[in-house]
Amino acid sequence: MIAREGVKVHLKKTPNIRKEQDAWRCLVLDADRLDQWPEIIISPFGVVDKGGNDASISGRTIHDLSYPEGDSINDCTDPDSVIKPENSHCDAVATEILRAKREHPHAKVEIIAGDVASSFRNISIHSNSVYLFAGQIEEENVLVIELSAPFGWTGSPGFYEVVGGAISHVHGSHYNTANPTGFFNYHWVDDHINVAPNVDTTLSEAERSLRFAMEAILGAEAINDEKFTQWKTRQRVLGLEFDSVAELVSMLQAKIDKARGIVASAYSAQFLTRKAYRSLMDSLRHVATCLRAARPSLQRLRVRESHLNRFQVVPVSDEMKQDLLWWWLVLHTPHLNGVSLEFFNVLPPPDIVVEVDASDFGLCALDTAAHRALTYQFSKVETDLINEFKAGSPNGFDINFRELLSCGFAVHTWAPRWEAAHQRDKRPLHVHFRIDNTSAPGKTSYRSEIREPRCSSAYSAGGRPRIDYDFQRPMWQELTMAVLTPAPAYLLTRLLRLFLHH
Image (cartoon, rainbow, N blue to C red; front, side):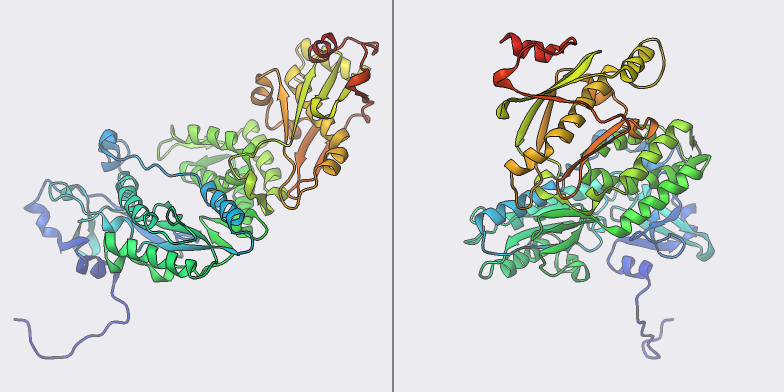
């Protein structure tokens, strides 16, 4: 018999499982019920990292629905029945910042981030399917049955995307004088990012609109006040820092340091477990977001990861060590300290277009708009390298590298003139090189700079070009197009021949 009068227990914090039960997100029953409901499928509980902390200290409890491998709930879920989330690239935030600055040049453009509380837990599981999402706490003789989409199920992100998209739609349907077509809203799962100019009451109206949209779709309890930031011109969102004043997006230093540590550990290891391999990929994801050149490498890592099983390990081969060394150099590039918003993901139209070509005898580059041309005849040392490569030596001095080398020499020679002719406030200079050999950018190893100390060309965060090479200083012959004649005493490349012919 339960007493109606007596001592009441007041808890400072409701235990999580009771909180979930009170919210009708799960059922907590005696494990003896399994004798009556044998069709219930039990999956183990697990702990994953939360907020970048060690899971052994601070973690998130999940339902490990990917176990046992090959026969888990995730493996048996029909992929055709699961909604595929269509997440847009976060360059939309950068694009909106630049748009707002153009339309309101005298106003500060600020950013705010909002968060939905217990995002996946707002998606209910059909009563005919809840038996698939059960777990057991043997120490307490307790059976837990999930009533809402659990964190760890392969279908949770896609089904929540419908809700997240609905919130964005409602919020984007509201407008004011500064946003006549509707408030901007970028969302990634449960994170909602807003960008708006600080004009009149625009900031308060945009925040009120977002809160209203969350409440209208999911109820007042869905608003996570602890995760709502203040309006700022410099905001940390999605693991990146957007600065609307400096017009830069950068990777957080803590994430850079963490990625360096993971890369260093992987380089020293003989093999990587699937968990360590995934941790490596996750740490490099933000790097690839900031640096376009790193994206193909990350894509190759992801392709390999998809074929790993739970207990399989990846041997750290010499080739992989070269990859990791390349990533280590990338993690020390100043690009991560600030990428221009205009260069974030989608490139702007080029300021300068340069045609380049190469042969077995030399290099050439044409800046047609400036009526300038460069020619360079290979030295005997370089010609010997070409002949050795043709004979089978793996020295890397192939036609792909030579054509890229012409790009580097053009930057080295013409950079001062380009910078003097294109003075820019914040945006770096965009130079586009046209190479007639389409395999050159793709087939040339992205690790060549660390395998052979030959040549590397890049732009620093401030947009200033630099080039480093171990050959003797190239004796370029710079000519104006108006006086070009077939005077050099070596065979001209196809591009230069074509120009002289016309």
